[in-house]
Length: 138
Image 1 (tube, one colour):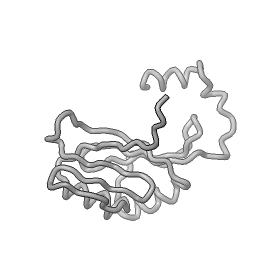
Image 2 (cartoon, one colour):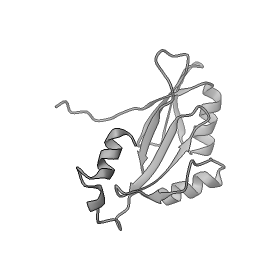
Image 3 (tube, helix red, strand yellow):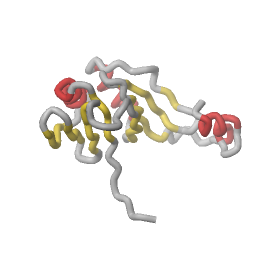
Image 4 (tube, helix red, strand yellow):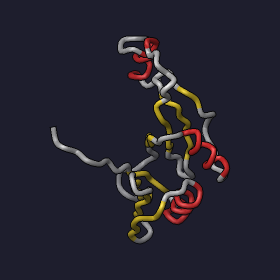
């Protein structure tokens, strides 16, 4: 196995300036790097997201899962900033407390943390109906 150390999601955007405003002003990321009107990188000192215009070859809406220490505090901060969430924050059967937003270009960002109070995963064990549904994309 190769010793991978980082993954950098690439999100397709239709307007780089609008995307940068959303990610920096609403979500609290910093602009790390920009190349013209087609590519930028935003980050928070721990993770980085590449933003590339949709005219870049092979890009379409994407989804990213961001793990945080406290999803409830991120949920509160982002909703206070006017970010529209796709549903309420909730603890899922797999033990993650999470919520999902959609950026102006349709990219979905799911933010969550492990809910330590969730200790019984028997309903989501490998081979269970719930696990099979997830593997099928349901």
